[in-house]
Image 1 (cartoon, one colour):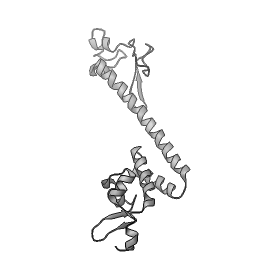
Image 2 (image 1 turned 180 degrees about the horizontal axis):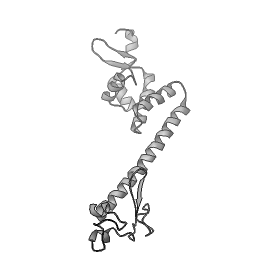
Image 3 (image 1 turned 60 degrees about the horizontal axis):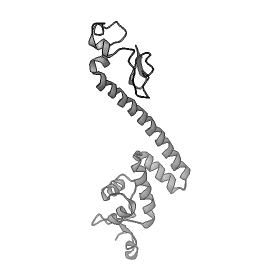
Length: 179
């Protein structure tokens, strides 16, 4: 083998052994090699077989853990570099920031689920009706006006309409209308 003595190659792990020890798939290991995130210690030029040092198992496990948290690859790369340089605090900062982003995304998704619940319960027409009395579709004779009555109250704890006061709908981040 090129660049590695024969007795040293026996101490190296095949891609299959590395996969079993790290929790990554062989496909993921090959991908991480191609993008330079987790290059093997040795690649046989003739066969393309990848070989890893046993001290790379910890790095591979870190990659697997961070990817299981949905950490983006560029941040995994930064965390691995920090970990390799002995800066565990930087790894934790990266994970904390990722948690903050995930929490914000979960909050946005909960809002979307809540709006979906209202849409399913009240119908699209009621959701799209202008409730300030100026809309021709929302007259006192209209069933839509009754379905979208501003005195209706949502039983969900997170709903701003729960108090029975004004009917407030959120159509996206920062876009709230109150009728």
